[in-house]
Amino acid sequence: MDPKLIADLYSFIPELTVTGTLLLVILADLSLARIRRTLTFVVAAAGLLAAFAFTIPLFGAEPRSLFYGMIALDPMAVFFKAFLLLASLLVLLAAPGSSELAKRQVGEFYALLAGVTLGMMLLAASTDLLMLFLALETVSVGSYIMVGYLKNDRASNEAALKYLLFGAVSSGAMLYGMTLLFGLTGTTKMSAIRDVLSGAAHPGGNALMLLVATVLVIAGFGFKTAAVPFHFWCPDVYTGAPTPVTAFLSVAPKAAGFATLVRFFFTGLAESHGVPPQWATLVSINWMPIVMVLSIITMTFANIAALRQENMKRLLAYSSIAHAGYMLMGASVLSGDGLQSVLVYLITYLFMNLGAFIIVIEIYNRTGSFELKDYRGFSRRSPFLSVAMSIFLLSLMGIPPLAGFFGKFYVFAAAVNRNLVFLAVIGALNSVVAVYYYARVMKAMVIDTGEETARVRVSWGNLALIWVMLVPTVCLMLFWNPVQRLTSSSWHLFLGN
Amino acid sequence: MIGLGHYLVISAALFSLGIMCVLTRKNAVSVLMGVELILNSANLNLVAFSKYAAGNLNGQVFAIFIIIVAAAEVAVALAIVLSMYRMLRTVNLDRADTLKG
Image 1 (cartoon, rainbow over the protein chains, first blue to last red):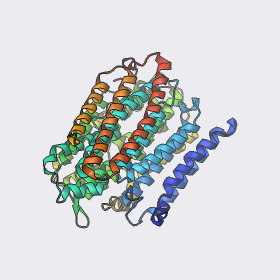
Image 2: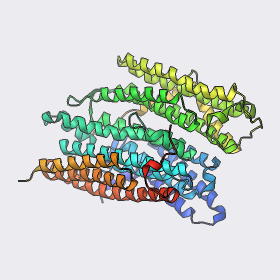
Image 3: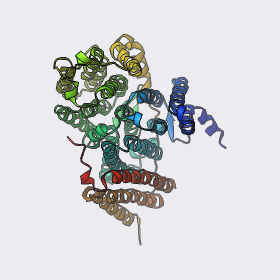
Image 4: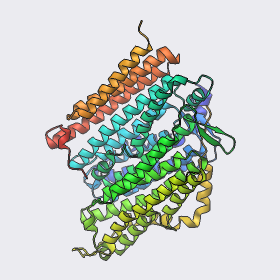
């Protein structure tokens, strides 16, 4: 066996750990019925935590490619591995506190979560179209099952079906685009695709074919990150899925989608010069305006559609689409600043969005409803939940000094640095629109009076989790130096072979 | 003489038929058939490009992986469709209308 492959395996330990966790959870699920629930949870949590610990030493590793150029080990990949493991771990911790999942066996759920996590880690690192497609399908197929996990619930079934059909069609379209790219360049490696397209053997007459291929690939990424007009599945799936799954989908696969989108465009369809690298699009395909327009319509449409939502999960679904729009804006400006802003945004988004979803889970456990009208007067039933929810919503609005403000600040600054002031202005206007629907929830909870007045006690597990999200959302500003250092060293991509 | 162009035309036709099938059919199983057409059009592209243009086997290996992934995807898809059938006694997508807004 090639000694290099063995050496590569040492840098692959986090993924191997997650694979081991997946198998161990399935084994643990075969144990005695009395301890099964606890055992599978402990095994899954320990496994993900171990994988997270194994990822830490990889920070600062020399950028290189692993397994004959299939995946890259670079600061960006390591950052996303750690990020995705953390997101999965937090969702895993939230799962036992949800009354929706309490009706079902959860062992398989944890196994699926581990499997999807593995897929996302590979997706964020893949530098080859084949690996990208396989990882994308691993994430998608696992997510379909997770969405339909409540198989006796009509909404959950319907959500799974819709997710599946949209997902299968968009990954099919993406695949067709990839085959055209392969035909144009004769290779499936992203860096080689760039070299062929920018080099002497430039396929002059095939600009149209390249455009079609790029648009089809964007459709696939658009589906994963839920960008308009590939978002139709998103509100329905988020509403029908069990809420922990909704929380998971709104953060982790979206982040993995952004990782692979950035890698594909910055490695495969852009040239870079100098240190720090200055990027420029290839002469044969200028994709910047396409992604920019996508970002603008994504945030505008989602913010307007969110205004009239009465269901909390649906409202947060549209909110998550809008946030995808801001992040797309960071990616579309094609600069190191832009990449850094996406990473900053993801860190802040992880805590504020998961926090909001955990409160939605807790309120559902107590009231059995996701409707906004049942949130009325909640500040008298549970002041803590109302205050915490208000903080998460203010952060989602982007009000300083909460975490969400910094994400938006970095994105807009990256746009202004590239002289794309109009983009930043559109983004800022959108944040103003967004204030309305977030404030509606706060108004319902704090100002309105509801019929129910009985006090609500928060379960200790969810209480602890809410605090875990609340502290970074409020205090991230105080620890800005480490965050700034982490993100500014993490946006570097491995661009070679 | 049959060349690359012929294969590409057939694959483009398959892709379009697949998309049309997905957009017009009401039956969930028929929609899945449309998805299969799309995936197979990609396979045809890959194998044709691999033979005529690229000069390597990457495309054919890619096609084999797609066949495997398609099988896995359809297994999950049929399970979900079956679960819907148990609940609604139909696989008509128009009946899947609880979630909207």
